[in-house]
Image (tube, rainbow, N blue to C red):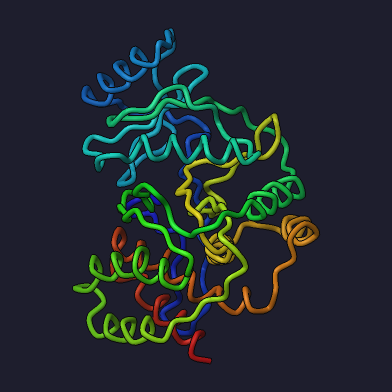
Length: 306
């Protein structure tokens, strides 16, 4: 997510989304932009703490409200001038969890409160079938409870720790309600409609899948070693959470979906619940990008009512 660069805009009339192709992840083509003194000092300290000696200047890859990302030689450094406590250590844990589940991710060199140092993955040819199989295998990794034993972040938004055997309750109490509290003043009367929707919410349960948690096309990359995942918000959830984000902003071709469903077909009940899971991501966009996403929240609620 990037401030002033929302991933999707909605037409003034009608409900059709206009997809905006953006890719604010740490493996974009480098851009030569001025580096502030504060960021330069933070990057130098992070590399020193990681025990990595480099002889190349930092090159800014992306940045904005969600943080700043630089390539420095063979590593990528992510930082923020005022990160919420736990942001970067949590991302590091998520990458390690994905790696343990068999996903290709950048190696974590170092994490601390001020930033994260990870491996640079060189670009490679697209392999959407391999990506589909990798994500399906991730979703097939299931546990006994939903949620997370430690707090997580969606972008920079903190979400509480907690686990349970009911996905409906975990999703309602630990995911949607914190976002509703944060967006109530922007949502106006829609907040009351969302409250009523939560009162009657019942989501299908296939099992507590391990999910990436923020799986839009900007958080994956095609590397020279094969497809890889970055910028996770890892938790145990219904896989519909990832599916909703992938469908929301597009960018996943039919070859991805064909390979995914060869491994893990998607039942009708899971498809029908995608609008409910979409609301999670739309509300965090209201937090960071404002009222332009409110219509999309209303549309998702309308789909649930159909």
